[in-house]
Length: 314
Image (cartoon, rainbow, N blue to C red; front, side, top):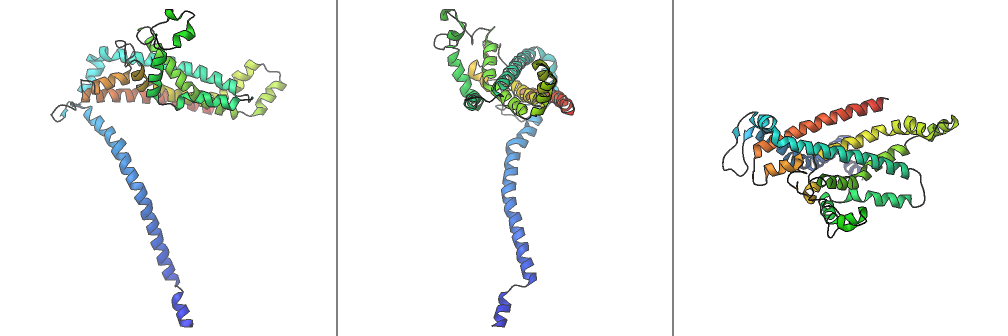
């Protein structure tokens, strides 16, 4: 019986071997999960990124039955010199749209956060209702607001005019079409700014306000010296995210105006889409335009990040 029990009990060397096998098995299982994900990410993100960069240095059309022809920097020179008159309008529209929409979102989002920072009955329910627009699909929002702006069926003109017959053609008037997109974007993304500012306001220690009240500091002094500096880092993050998204604005614009009337609301993203797909299929030049926009966004982001670092250091 003693010999049978001795054979049944594994030695220390056998236990070490079994543990090693389990470790190898666990490592293999982890690799089986990791490698397919990495391959999918490379196939869906990294490869198209570098392939489009390569095509931006070529004279190539995706529908042409010809291989890419290397032209070096000619596509970039065409956009920045000869094509400057063609594309400058799109950059101007995008800049105006970004400045108006981001500026209004910051003002409205900050104001809503200041109103909702004080807890009251039903504040949670109101906050949830305000957050609903940012949860919707941008394409659905564009089509939804297209019906609202309709002068005959929509009710937007009823809200701003006593006489509905005097309502404006928001989507077909060149002077109002850009404002219609700004209104929709502000309605959709002001809650995002409000959410970030609310998180910053909730993190401000109460003793700062108590000390200011003891010193008989005014409400304006408390806002300027306590509230605004404490919230500024998150506010700059909101500005950074919304500026980047404004430069990439496409889905809401296509859902509302399609870039019209004429080209009054044709942002850079819409122009890029039309150059790459809508009849022209100028793949090489559109790729160069996409990377010029990427460089501009990176430059703007670096400016915001520097400002954010200075605000965090203060």
